[in-house]
Length: 130
Image 1 (spheres, rainbow, N blue to C red):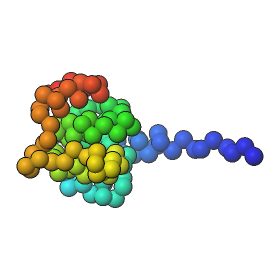
Image 2 (image 1 turned 60 degrees about the horizontal axis):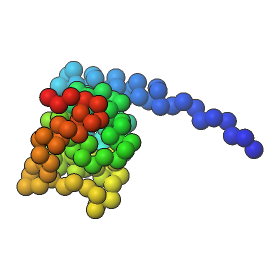
Image 3 (image 1 turned 90 degrees about the vertical axis):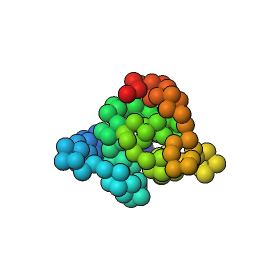
Image 4 (image 1 turned 120 degrees about the horizontal axis):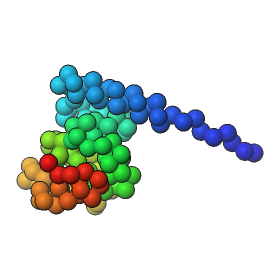
C-alpha cells in the first residue's frame, strides 16, 4: 500500500521556534539556562534556532552544523553565541547525538579549540567570524 506523504510540519514548527526565540532574545531572556533546558527537554528545533539567534548566524548554517554532526562546528556556534564550553559539550551530546568518543569536551573550563579554528569552522559553515 502507498502511504500518503507526511504532513509538512517542519515549516510551521520552524516559524514557531523562530518567533519564540526572537521574543525571548528581544526581552533579554534567551540565555544559556534556556538553551540548556531546551537541550535537556529534547527540543532540538528550538535549541537550533536559539543558537542561531544568540550567535547571529543564519538558521540554515546552524542546521547544517547539526545535520553534518560537526562537533567542531557546534563548539564554534556556541562560542560565537557567547555560551559556555560546558553547554557546547551538552549540545554535542543532545543536539548532534554524538557518542562520547566523538565529543570535544570542555578543557580546563574553556573551549578545547583555538579561537582561529572556531572562526574557521564558522566560515566553513557559511558565516563570517566576529
